[in-house]
Image (tube, rainbow, N blue to C red; front, side, top):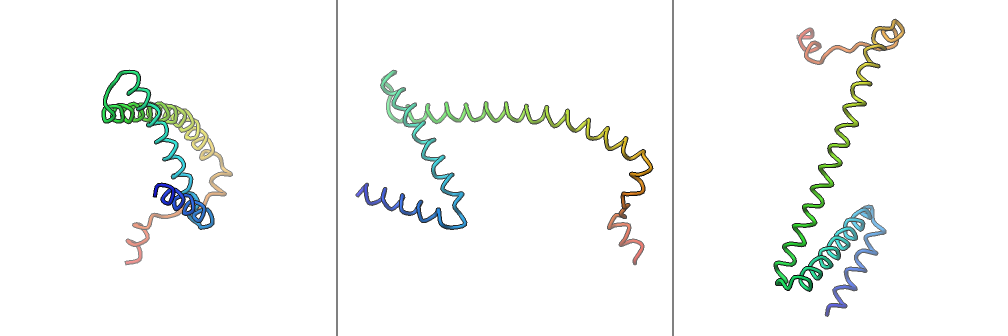
Length: 121
């Protein structure tokens, strides 16, 4: 019975590769790899510390969540630092370009939609 469901799952994933939703297969594979990591941590905890299976799964999931949160925080700090550095330089460049005469000749000034509605009433 397990082979039937496994075969149907594989057949469904192969069929999904030929549809516009083929990116979903990547999510399936990532989920399976994640669950294999959970299983490995759980078995290591159960055999090392003689805890129950339920506690092994709970600790394994908490460890992976803590790892994901730490990675997310590190990436967010890195992106925020890079965007602050780039943002200041982009603002300075924009202000210098705005002062030049060629910038004022090439840029089309647009009115706000609110101003447009006020004048056409």
